[in-house]
Structures are given as C-alpha cells and as structure tokens.
Image 1 (cartoon, rainbow, N blue to C red):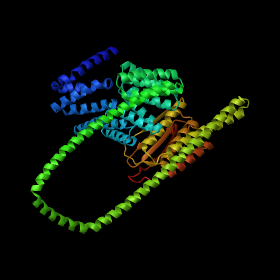
Image 2: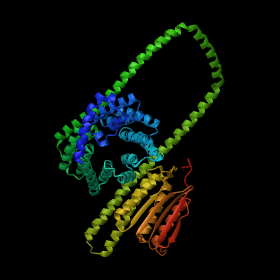
Image 3: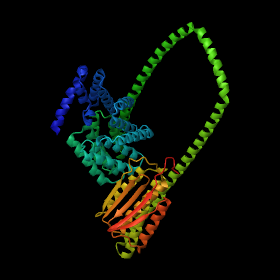
Image 4: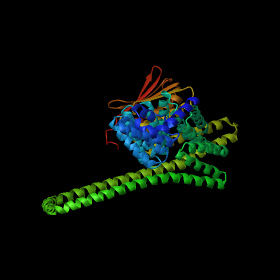
Length: 597
C-alpha cells in the first residue's frame, strides 16, 4: 500500500506541476481526474492543490463544462478552508452550491451545505446548526449514498458535542460509523472512531477512549493519510495530557506540529502550539510556555491577516465599481439637463397624482401601522416571557446538577468508605449499605434524565431516539447475557416536537418496562420498537422472560406508575402475556402543526 501511494504522490506532483502550462488543452476526462483526487491527498499540499483546481476551473469554463466548474468550485472551497482563508472558502462554496443545484446534483448540494455549517461552528454556532440541518434534510430527502451521508452525520455529532448534548453526539457518531463500515470506508472510519474516542476522553472513560484512538491511528498509518496522522498525533497529546503524563503529551504535540507545518494545515498548527504552551505551563516551565504561546498568537494572527487582506481587496474592487458608477451618473445628469422641461412637467403631474393617492390612504396606513406595532409588542412580550422561563428552567437544572447531584455523589462515596471500614464484619449492615448505594446511584441517573428534559423547551422524536439508544447502549455495557434490540422508523417523518413533560413520560415508561424485564422477568432478550403509523405512534417493549408475577409489590408499583404516565399522555397502557414473555404497548397521537403546548 505504501509503494502504491508513493507512486500516486509522484504522479500527482507531476500532474500539478504541469497544470498552469497545459490548462488550455484539458479534456473533460482530464478535468474530472483532477477534481476526483482522494480527499487526504487533496489537502496534503494545499498550495499545489489550489493551483491544480484553479487551472482545472479555467479549462472547464473554456469548455463550458458545467460539472467540471461545479467540482472545481467545491474543491477550492475545501482548500481555502484548510488554508484559513474563510472568506474565499465561503465564496467558492456558494458558487459550487449554485452550479450543483442547476445540475440537480442534490448529493453535492447537501454535502456543501453541511460542510459549510461545520466550518462555521467556531465562528457562528447558530448559523452552523442551520446550515448543517439544511444539509441533513436535503440528503435524507433525496436518499443520497452512504459515502455522502456518513460524514454529514459525523459533523452534526460534533455540533451536538459542542452544545454539550452528549447523548445525541454519540448517536450520530455511531450512526455515521455504521454507514462507513457498511461500505468499508477506510478514510472515513477513523474520523468517527476519533470523535467517539475524544468524547469518551472528555467523560473520563480513558481506557475505551484510547482503544478507539488506536484503531483510528492504525487505519490512517495503513493508508498513509498524512493529515489524518497529524490529527491523531494531536489527539494522543490530548489523551496523555488528561491522564497527567505530560512528557508523552509534549512528545506527541511536537510530532503533530511537524506534520501540520509540513502539510500547511493552519488550524491544526495553531492548535498544537497552544496545547504545547499549556503542557509547559502545567509543569511550571513558564519560559517555554510563554515562547510557544507567542508562536500560537503569531500563527493565529497570520490566518486573520489573510482574511483582512481578502477583505481589503474586496473593498478596492467595490471602490473601483463606485467610481465607475459615479462617472455613469455624471453622464446621465448631463443628458437629464437637456430634457429638463419635459421631466419637470411630467414630474409635476406625477406629484399631483401621488399627493391625492397619499391623502386618500393616509388614515388607512396609520391604522395598519398601529396594528403592526401592537402585534410586534405582543410578540416581543411573548419572547421575553419564554426567555425568562427558559432561564429559570436552566437555573433549576444547574442547581439540581451542582447541589443535589454532588450531594448524592458524596453519599455514595461515604457509603463505600463505611463498607470498607466494616470490612464485611456484619453482612446485614453490608447488604443494607449496598442497597442504599444502589438506590442512590439510580437516583442520580433519574436526576440526570430529569435535567435532560428540563433543559429542553421541546423534545423531538430524534431527541427521544437518542436518549433511548444511549440507555440501551449503557445497559448492554453493564449487563452480560441479555440481548437488546432497538428499532425505529420515525427518524425521517416530519413530526411536531413533544413537550418536555410528554417526552419524559414516554422515556420513563420505556425505561421502567426494560428495567422490569431485567429485574423481575429475568429475560435474555429485550426489544424496544417505535413505529410511526398513519395516525399514531406506537411504542412496544417485549421480552422473552417468565412473565408477570402480580404478587411482587415492586413490579406492581412499577405498573401503576407506568399506567399513570400513559394516562397523562392520553394513552392506554396494554400489557399482554405472550407464549413466552411479556409485551408492553402504548400509543399516542402525533401532534398537529402549531399544537405544541
């Protein structure tokens, strides 16, 4: 594989070197071969790639080859992003979208919308979400291929992670990884593995995080993905920093810096310099920390300066345009003076008509303006009220998490210390302490679920699927010998969001049913299924356990709670004893548009 890639590098180098001299002689096939260079080779040397794609664009325009023009625009948008020239990247991205839309290449349009949203994530997060969601909806509507959809899901997961929606982030990372593994996408699989690993690192799951980073790094070494290798070296630096091995952390950041400089990856270069400064600072090596931080500032400012130069060039262009417009206006003024009499006469007649019209409609316009002002005031008052309610909701959830959550964690720690102190001297006390500890841990999980619901004004079917999927993944991890399965056909349905209360009731019923199957029915297979039918949404939890024993008080109390939650959803909880096992079913009516209360 290494030999093949080396030959490919050499051929691409020769091809890029000849671009400017023979561009006028390109055929459509040659333009396509330039634009279809693999992604990791495309960004390996952005300056050579830039020349190649500009030459290909000139040739495509000379041939009026629309597909070649669109592909060249899209490639240039990617190259300029990696060079830190964000204004140019945005301009070429918009041009590519326009060309692909005319060609009805909706897979590329969806990819460009989503890619632009991903690039905006650190500059304008709300706009980033808007463009990313637009790309996802377009891709799912036109049923694009896995190779197009999987990186979109990956990048949407990054936005969810930045917004601290970790359950949703895991959901989209795993969804993307599954699509990539289906088509054996060796370039794309490491991106998903790294994203999952870095999120696990953030949550303190160091062992499993390292396993995912190692898998990604091994694949990238095998395919000789230079930019990918640089990125993984940076991730290793972050990993060793988090486990306080600062020597190894510094070694990996130095290696990552060498790669990012060699292949002109501007953003990663400034990130490596910044992280090296942090490593030296935590070791009290302030001289080295200051030196690398200064280098980070220089690198960051150089990218900003490039953006300023682009804007200055645009201002010069606008200035030249304004000067030409002024000259045209002067010529028109001279012509207008020659026809002044005719213009004045026509103008007086027009003014007379307009005065009559405005007098007639003055009162009507004033009335309409007052109505609009009242409507605007009502809308502003409603928005202000909603904002205050959201702030109160967030404050309550923070208080629950910071105060009650920390207190419950302290209780668990204290119980564990007591168990250690007794050292199994009294089995009865030990069992009681274990029961209290388990109950407290379950209380923390329920508290987190409550905080999740409180943080949202509304819960979409996507949010509910993400939460259920994460709950089942955690159950798989903690329980062996039980086979779990989760199915849903609702992701592509246009459903109105649920209230946070309704969403929480649905989740709690499913959670209680699964827990009953585990604890009381002793099931070895549990299936959760959501079906979006024509007029209703059906939730079904089935197992192959030993059925319901109504004499068990804890099980009976659980059923009572589930039925109460179903009643709050205007639903009827149906429990059916199967030939082997139990089925719990409830149905709800989808909300109509504008009916979210």
